[in-house]
Image 1 (cartoon, helix red, strand yellow):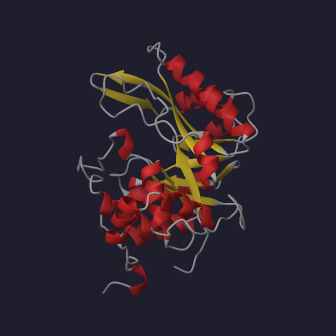
Image 2 (cartoon, helix red, strand yellow):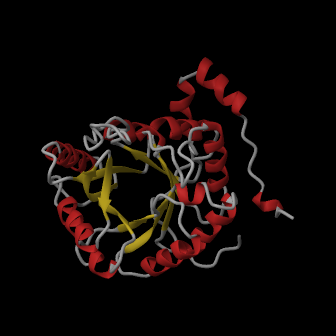
Length: 303
């Protein structure tokens, strides 16, 4: 028998569609009126649900290449996740955050804007991670609480230097606006028709060293890093606050949770940013998966 507290909150999609059609100014009003909170509070830990994958054409989860294609299903999962104890906020592109603001799901939550989604999954230009989402000005105007950008570094692709330059400008702009910015760096390479991230310890350390030095100030820079072997060495590569990246999902959840638990206990780690692994779990129990992760981040919760 399902627990009553795992029931998804009601979502009025008819009202959402009507508002978008009849009153687009309601989006700015929803952001202006939402209840905000500090980025970090209480135990100093942060648990963010990520939902910026679709804008890069990355709709797959596990064996299902179109798992995230249904926006209504995604929003239901996000609203449910955000209703659970210990979930501090959400990371998304403007379209996703706009929907969530109109639904009232961002009240009391951290809202993180995703900046560069131009490197579309599977495209010949995938490594060209252009800034096609939020910019610093739009995030400040909407009252978002933090920003995030992807920094993929391919030493065989001359275009990488443009990404690094654009990222440096974004870091500087965010620091000037006092907007915390999560950098997600990878050493990456093209293998046939795919871009593959190198998750070896040395490659992650190198990506951290490169990303940490971008921009005119690192005062508001955070790192968003994958959990890899020898995370102790990875975390010794920078003094920046770090959140852990949850991965693409599809693996053994018990193994995944164990790796998160170990890494969350290391110095410099302040929390977790996870998307597909929790929004599309093997057993379909979104609330249950989110509750496990929340307990790992914040300790025992009354779930």
